Length: 221
Image (cartoon, rainbow, N blue to C red; front, side, top):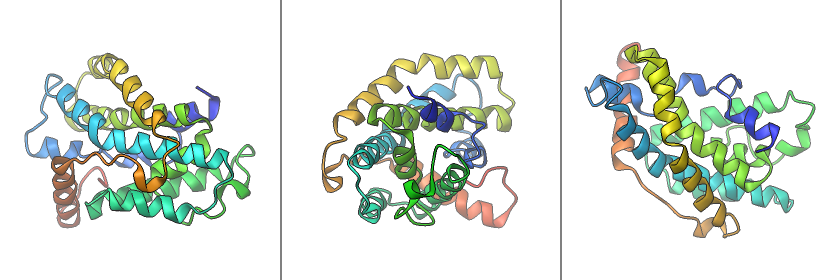
């Protein structure tokens, strides 16, 4: 994995990931996740659905960037079509905008790299453009799909951070498998990319968005 991909997957990268729980906050509010024992199932489900989708588009975007592709609105539209929740789309674009802004400050990411992506790209798309190799982009996206909610669980529920990190580590083989499968589809036309769905996470996202407008929440999504 190259250094840029590692940087993008780092929780300290100023890409706005710290403000998003990936549905964990709403799940916790509903009592679906209370303890460390509840967390693996939530993370595994998120990895196999939203994480897979992000990995697929990150890998495809990395592949297209390597070929000099510039029509990023096409890829963005395809990811929009696979994200039925308006709240999920907004969260993805908020992280994408923050990631693009942070990347624009790096000497290794000249402004030319970001031309054509738009002011609010989907996070998986900009992640792929910046990460380099499709395999690295997919692995970063798959890892972020569970590391963000895992970190949110510690902050929201006061879970043992050592046990939570052990849970994330135990999912390592599944993260690798998701990334490998996504990388295998990177060459496909964006219209033909897989579209795993997650109605449960979509509903949690919509409910969280409604509650966030009614009361103070720790996370934006």
